[in-house]
Length: 279
Image (cartoon, rainbow, N blue to C red; front, side):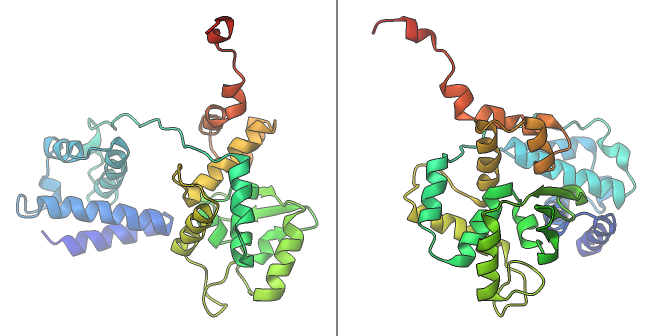
């Protein structure tokens, strides 16, 4: 089985179709492992039958990991092998429904209090103020920030969709101070030397370090969690969920409704029958 040939064809095809780089890398990695698994068992991937594919997918313990591999392999058979019907009777496993364990406003404040580096403060501020994804943060250009309309234009977000988010008044002097110190040219966040983009790994390290400095050791803190915190706190502040949907860039309000479940205001203030009982 000529695995490199198939991998190259797959990468080229989904790149041509406009898949984002992270998705391309993830899908290619999944298909690479899949082909390696059957190398020596079959001579060509089109000879792998439905039962074998189901057994392979069933080997993943995590439902979400299985779903991710399912999507990647399904795309491979559709776009490279022209066998879309191979997955006609292979249904996705049920999606895990896990709520993110969000930080409180006080814990976010402690992270800001622990932040002494100006660039790190800008990173945390942009992530939290408008719930940016890390890829959207890294691709944010100075030209995307519209002070006249007080919005930030997110160009080519998830699904290659554009949207607008609010530009907080508090961000303006912070960004001005940051620009005077770092003089980044095109992208707001610059890497080493001032010209290259900041890396996703560096953003992750900044968030983890700030959580550690803030003494948050009972929750797992990661970059995307700050986005969850942003929208949860908006719900708790009374922002309409349909507005949050537009800010978040969700195609369906059902996705946004998760923040109704993570809002402690809605849960903690709910009447408990135990209140009628003398303990």
